[in-house]
Image (tube, rainbow, N blue to C red; front, side, top):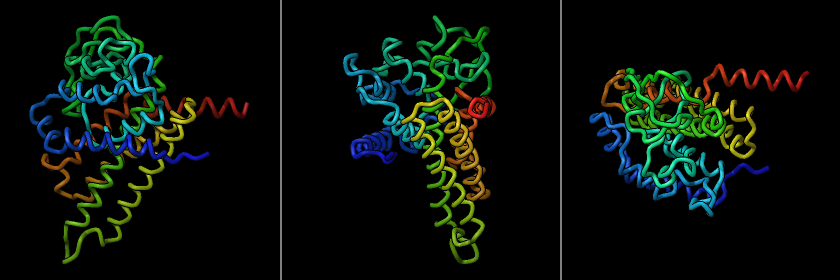
Length: 298
């Protein structure tokens, strides 16, 4: 079985990367952080026009008619660019919530477990609820992922598998980006008359980052093809680890500079922490895999 992207899939990924580079580059990301705006409605509509949210919606319903393998490539690029907002929930709501496919509606979801909802203040709808509930703001570790606590949690379990996989793809994109940031900085920063990338300890850090990210990416691609619950759980586990540990290692490579507000490393780490709690946590993924192992040996 060949898990390599086709030429059409590569072109799709390149097109999304080009769109996001032009529309949501580093300057736009930092402007979002400074303003505290988690959802840019204009960008949301542009993503809708590009087919981001309607990617898996059948052509007969006005969508693009592609599948999960293509969706994970697109979401990987969004994770790489750290595009904020409930991308996964709005994508899952295409064909269910009016305006979601076109990007004219922002849709959140009960994907954090319990009564927490991300981007509730910007949401026109919430998956798992008949109407947008009232909520109390809760301080979030990620400046671009505002959280609210609601009185009663809704049920978005019907979307859990696809939601977990697409979130894993976002994590993979972030993990790969932190590899790029670490390698670039290691080649630029000098100590003792040579780039720090020449030191074995730094080489090992970057190598481990790359291995984790590529293993996670392979798992996400495989799960997108098979669609099996165990594969999705494993992909989310690996992607969460790659994103969180990758950001930490990237911070380590940057040294003191990595702890400053001006560096982007902390943004990847904070977003990775939040995503690790979305749709399926590590404990939940481990339970899925344990049940599958028990069933296969029983």
